Length: 255
Image 1 (cartoon, one colour):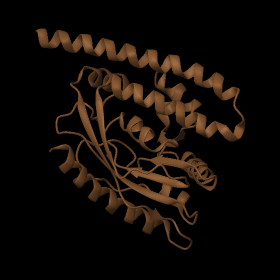
Image 2 (cartoon, rainbow, N blue to C red):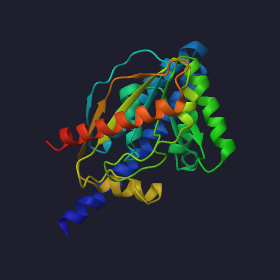
Image 3 (cartoon, rainbow, N blue to C red):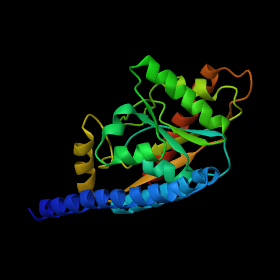
Image 4 (tube, rainbow, N blue to C red):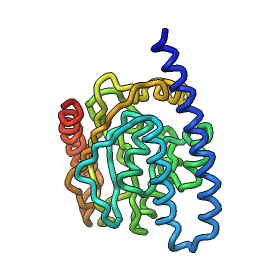
């Protein structure tokens, strides 16, 4: 009973902290953004998003072992497997840039407003028009020299098998000269971070009650989206690289 009481108290504190941190940073960022010159807003966004990510990772007691990460200039597309909502904070803290996310996130409590404000690219994979719009948005960002983070499996899964990648992100990157950076993520087996078959409030509550956890992030050698390299080739190379990196990340996080 004592253990359950501690979990309930932890859950309440973390959920409240999540709301407080996001609610405090969002209007402060919006004010600063409105006062900042257009050509400086990207750097401002990355600084404020990094603060938010640091706060959330500390709040949920997620420690990140990141290897192979570089802060080089874009254009680049970071492609990773997807296992938890907290992956977003892990990757944004490591690489900066913008995230491509499922469309329904825009309606999630509080975090949806934050995601919209920082320029998240939303896509409904069941809607061809939404998919085409997301491809155009990603390509525009890459042509501007920005970093775009993509979970090309399309949703979260609980194991180390990297599912087939959707092709839209690679269509967007093809011929741009962007670097496609493959990333493998692994959490300890049994970690409370996994997000599978539940609503966001349910996931947040369960993760908020979980014990501290680790995540291993391993970035691999970039794949250049050179002229005349077909998007299908980029997709297949990225998938193979991410799968190999996930196995390496698993070995690291289980040590």
